[in-house]
Amino acid sequence: MLIHDRLVESTKSMKKLSKAESTANDLKKRKNNDASFHNLVMDFQRNMKTYQYANQHLSYQLPEDLRQRLKIYMQSLRSTIDDNSLVDEDCLSRDKSESKLLATILKEQWKIFYDNKLTGYNGSLDILNGLGDTSLGIDQLRNRLEAGRNWETLGMPYHNGTKEIIVVLAETVTRINSLLNELDLTDGVKTFLRAVSQNWASMALLTPEVYDWIHKKGIGVRFSIGFKKDNNNYI
Image (cartoon, rainbow, N blue to C red; front, side, top):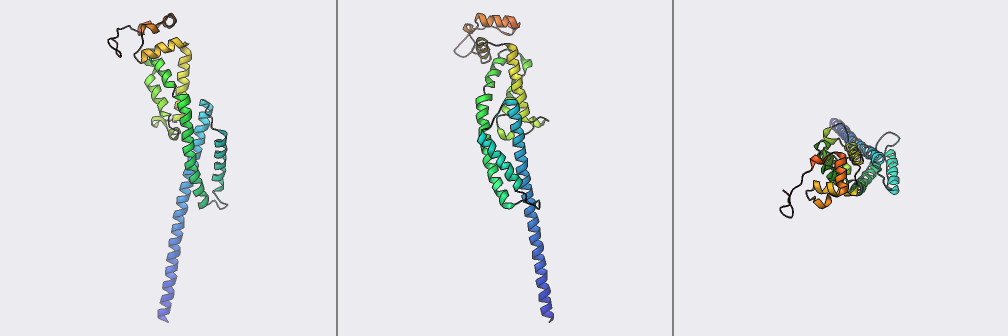
């Protein structure tokens, strides 16, 4: 009888230990699922905040079908939490897959917009650089413009500062447009300044129109004339 009692107690102990281990594993899995779901929600919120800012300040527009897909994904995230406020594991797996696909699409869409609408501002900076005015901070503007190239980093702080990269990018575009508007540039002047910036300006580009503009702006002292010594360099 004594042996039997010991076996019974041993069995009970093993069952308790197994139950405790199972509970610990369940808690660990629940914690991991909660963390994964939290990351998905935070990523989605950051992407939507970035899009709304880009839409408002840079006229960035996602295709209608993608906007609808994002709405469906948002509803999917909401349904991932059950009535007991627990993360449904199957729904979580579905959301993870969709999140990866959406991340790729958002990245591609931004690249198209950046290449078509924002890359050209480098040419505008070349024009402004031709003025020879260091107070304009052309290099800084160019760095800020370049920082906004990648969608996945737009919601991050710029140089560990308080402003997000998308905010800095929008401010940079506004600044460049403001400078160009203040200068009242004609096509001939733009060509001349770009040539000066890239060190290939010739006397042929110094037309009466350009000369009058330089005189009107009072910046003639910033320019000098040299002789070309070969195909690429001036003295």
